[in-house]
Image (cartoon, rainbow, N blue to C red; front, side, top):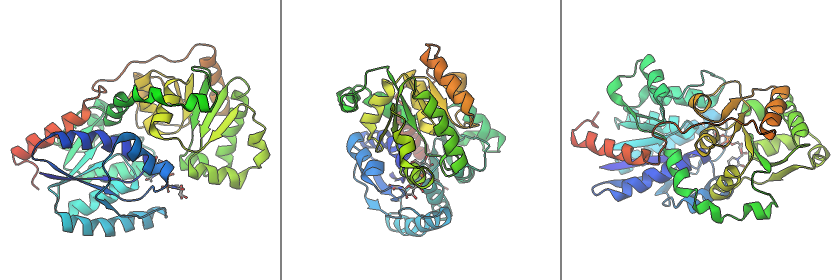
Amino acid sequence: MKILSVVGARPNFMKIAPIARAIKKRKGLKHILVHTGQHYDHAMSGSFFKDLGIPKPDINLNVGSASHAKQTGLIMIKFEDVLLKYQPHVVLVVGDVNSTAACSMVAVKLGIPVVHVEAGLRSRDRQMPEEINRLVTDSISDILFTTTQDADVNLIKEGVPKDRIYFVGNVMIDTLLLNVKRAESSRILKTLRLKKNHYALMTLHRPSNVDSKENLSLILKAIEKVQTKTKIIFPIHPRTRKNIKKYFSATWLKGMKNLILTEPKGYLDFLHLMRNAKFVITDSGGIQEETTSLGIPCLTVRENTERPITITHGTNTLVGLNKNKIIKESFKILSGKGKKGRRPKYWDGKASERIVSTLVALNRKGKLLR
Ligand code: UD1
């Protein structure tokens, strides 16, 4: 069976790494890896291939950054040629970025079955570009692999037949568990002069938080206060960096003595930073899951989450775009009252093996044909 899988943007890389490994272990499977080039900087893409040992992509579509329509359209045009040339038996996509939705649409129209890994997550917030990508991808996928049982319920409610849904667990956590020991060799704490458990880690990149001057200013004002009590490490996403530069004077952030700005970090350095932080402030989807798995308290600067299990079972708290809540919850954690959680079912490092075994079994039964 020829499986063609797709990566495009940063959160895809850690999801594909364990799937690529599981495919390689099986006889009779051929893996073709396509990088759409949605992310292209070393810090946003190349460093993850190196850190996670992901095979070099067979094809890079080099689409780069553009508006949603242009980027999605360009991926579709270029990906169609790839599918016509390679004729895979299935196309496997992960997550919810533009590359995920674009490649699913092309495959399905060429009659190639689509496998979606991390299906069924719903924020019910259609202002999020990722929510649209999730809805589109899930509605046309043939096989839907889910990370949690609430995702199965979402899909069933939307009319997806039960026999297409497989609850297998979380491939991102496969990567986390595999690398947690390796990350111990990272020198990032030394480089940034940090003591374990004596700093907070922050990431921000959602357009709803960082494209609006008002919202970004509200978050940074909360951070201005929190950093009076703890060091905060802030690896800055390129979108956020551009906007901070556009909206605010350089002296404002420089005046926050405990706020340490850095370039985006590679996988192992970031994992080491996360694992040893007192807490994490973020608007990322993946980090809500990773902190739950590591047992590190997480404050999510969003009004909703497509990953509710991180709240019900995990260490996550939604603080919304609420300055006082960001400050209050940060201080609560600093006073030793951080949320403790437990690891959700099947976030056990074996999700990729389950996925590949399921695909092999389905193929044997002839159920992967459209
Ligand atoms: C994309 C994904 C988002 C994911 C995020 C992780 C979509 C709709 N969005 O958002 O789901 O959480 O990636 O980072 O698919 N840029 C660089 N170097 C790069 C890539 C981007 O400098 O390698 C800059 C570009 O100027 C670009 C901006 O960052 O305009 C934003 O990048 P873009 O890919 O449009 O969206 P993200 O915010 O990264």
